[in-house]
Length: 234
Image (cartoon, rainbow, N blue to C red):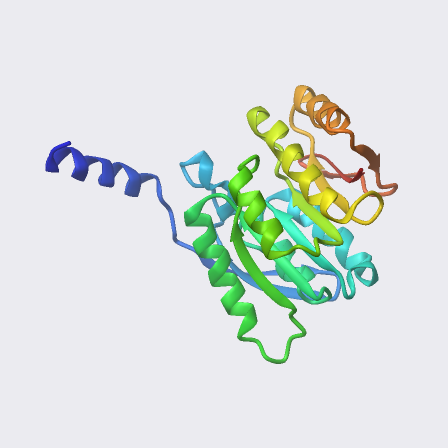
């Protein structure tokens, strides 16, 4: 590849990248969070993690209303994006591991972790960012080795929007649940319905991986589309 071609590729990549992050205030119950995020979608679908999506709002409202269940726990979040759910959990949990597969998204995630770690008057737990691509055995094994004690909760908010990723998601979830064993860890998924085919696929993939899915009563809400909280376990 010659120099002109390399320059052209760099220019194309920069065209797709929007890092005009704004410090934004979010309120969930009594918890007020400030995070850097975008207010409009990037042109690159792979950078959806730069936004706070409706499913994260649903999950955070649910967690803020049930904050006592988080106290003292260790959690891992899949597809953390800018970290709005992980940061909220940091107010109550002992350890919060936030993950994403995209390097650009990890940059803003770490920036938000640094922002909240600097607030000495806030009861933030140990907040950590890790790279994790669903279905990537090497990365999954690395996390399992770093956290051999496992987690009390696996969290995910608005992370089901590509059909090809759903089997990989549940492959990853099952491995994380198996660290603790049956009944000792559960996956809390804030799901927003956007296509009937995806609705069915999520339930069927969980079942195909030997996982039990329960809708949490009273969590249905309309955020443009129907949203709901699922509890998924071995």
